Length: 184
Image (cartoon, rainbow, N blue to C red; front, side, top):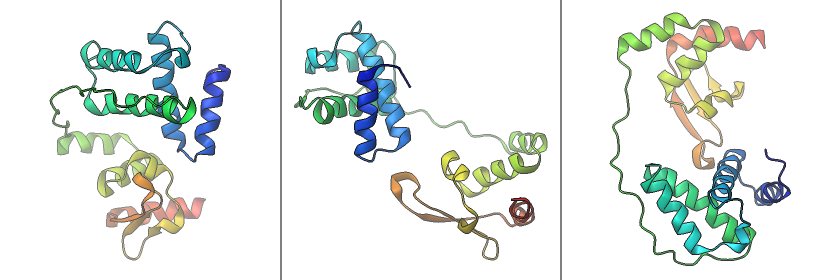
């Protein structure tokens, strides 16, 4: 994090409100970017017009995706509405109209090359990500009690949206996961 007392106090405010660490980092990134965009001016001296200018810059000059623009807006809405207690009101702002891109999907031979390259625990992590559809953070936060090796299922706790969900696990993961569990 930055040495800025201002950003540090925003971080503390987000922690007090129970924001996730990931949201905190994202918001601080966008607030820092916004301050730099306006030549290090104090945000409390800026207002809705400067927010619109920044969001337009992101859409027109940086060509960001709609969701990226929404993340920046959410960060600035928190800054003004929650932290500075200076509501932005209706900005009359229109989001960028960038076309959605189709995701890049690896071919089966490409996936096999990755599997061949990885060994041990890393191969098991990739197998869970690939075979069970977990997000990276969900996989890295898995606990032993979330694995059901008899039913071949994985229970993800506090996943996206703080929701629990259960997903399938490949039978080929049973033995490698048992070995990891025994090792731990």
